[in-house]
Length: 365
Image (tube, rainbow, N blue to C red):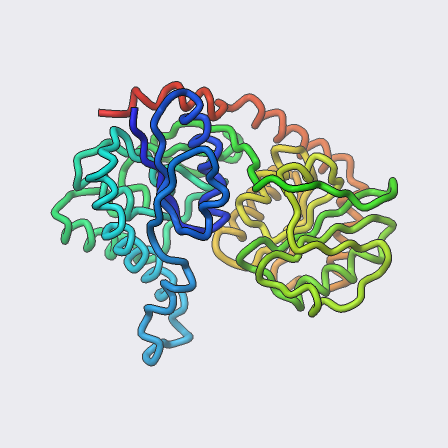
């Protein structure tokens, strides 16, 4: 069976789809993955085609001279519900004509791919990327307008009324969509895992690939360094390591780490609340200290706190002393550690990518 996967071209949107795409390929399906060229290196083993533009470029297409800082949510909606979908519609229409997929799997943040499938009469599934699937205020109008221009009727949401391949653990379930349960499998491009030497607890600090800020990272580094721990920091692509300055001896800074391999060795994850890191920590039963910066990170923090698997600090609460106090508490809290392990056990019982790949043919036309 020919299956076309498509997602926005960022780590947080591509990585969640990779395990199922690879499993489908291994099961004998002909898999094509359409996304931005910057992410093609992560997709070894399947055919890749370039589609879409970066989120940064999409924001650059907004009418800069007329932008009102009071309406930032409106501009975010414009980017994700109109600019990006329209680019994907244009880029994927000839791909669908060439590949002739029997099933399209469009990532939740990429309704443009789902609309192309609807126009072509190809069945589609929507693949979630985290615990939550958050609609942007005002998105229905923009998605509905594009669907009308294309001459198709859909539920005017990012899911488009398609079944949701859902990574959310059942006890944290928030979506009311018709769902296909899929176990989240942490993914990262392969690389050497070198752990800091010593036997003190290991704390992993990251702000992800899209929300890194030097001042936040430096404050968190100093706050964690005063504890009797080893601190491993993934600076990420948005932070120049040199700007972080000198750090204490118990802190190791790297621009990138193979996070999927690292998490099994960690005692506490301090992070931004991105979907990949949140789910990765849950998969490995690791307590979390979340410092949400934007997007779905606030809802992810709420879900982790509700499961008692960690705790978060809002931007108003964030500060060095608060991070030190909360990190010390989480490292010593057996109840939080037990709750994280319960979440890991629940996730382990979810359907594997191989299980779902075996059923993909039932959703095709």
